[in-house]
Image (cartoon, rainbow, N blue to C red; front, top):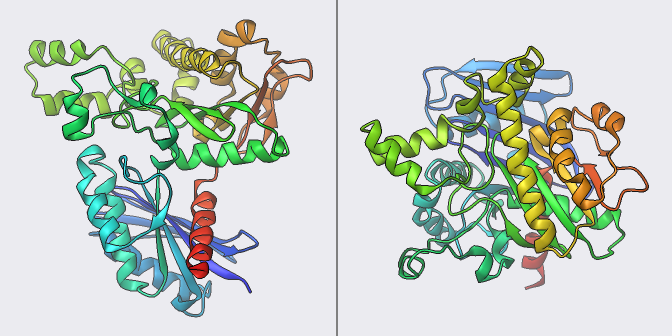
Length: 402
């Protein structure tokens, strides 16, 4: 008997959703709310006759959830909300407390709130989305799927910071990583490609937020993002790894508060800060093709940071079998992929198919290495919503067994 599972990704001013039929994993509908809490919000949803777009006031997430549930019935996507058996909620920060997805209970909600200082832009929004859906779908199974849980297999040498140990003991300051749902999805897909054969894998999740993860036999051994999503490689608006003294000097020279500098490092740096053009790699690529020097510096710096992590993880894994590019930039910007691979191919024995790389964009799967390459290089589109749904199904089945 088929059932419906709703995957939710609730941001500070947005809410993405995708409704699946299981066990077939067929997508029934999907859509997005944008500009929640602003004067006028936007909503779009896919129906049998095409995509419907509306502009309407969305003062909070609860209103957005009400609009969504009414739309599901209005467009005859479901006859009754009772048809939705489970709702999976993406939660960015689970700290050291969750090494797997769990049923979203009041106790879990309290912990998500407690961990909000570790992800102030994300956890409160994730929690708000859960609370809104819990009111409207009280009988459905609600599941929290943590971005950090996949990375809990790291050893202390990989997650501790070289600061006084008391700060780890008192405040849990350590590396947590992010994008774990995506990294796990890709690791599972590579396991399928290899028919279960053990594999040393490097996953490059390159979107506006980005992270690199070293995976050995399906488990994370190291990841680039740190205590918060600010660490790791350069991103759309975030610095990535940075000499901590830069924070001190910018604060002094510009007479800025710690909050102002932290905000600048999170929202005005990365591709946007270096290029002065945009946080969107496509815009920077267009400027690069027109001869913009800062756009060239931006791509050079970005590809260098990613390549350095690939080299580091190649050693950490004791050799690499497979590299996967995924997410918005990883799936859609061949120029960046080529620059990254060009920086590591000689050391890693990669033979790269430039023509296949240039053709692989728009969310399609592709093998970018030649048959003689020592390391396979793929583009594999990520599907975090599907991973969320699979975790919901697994937890529902485990509950039945108890």
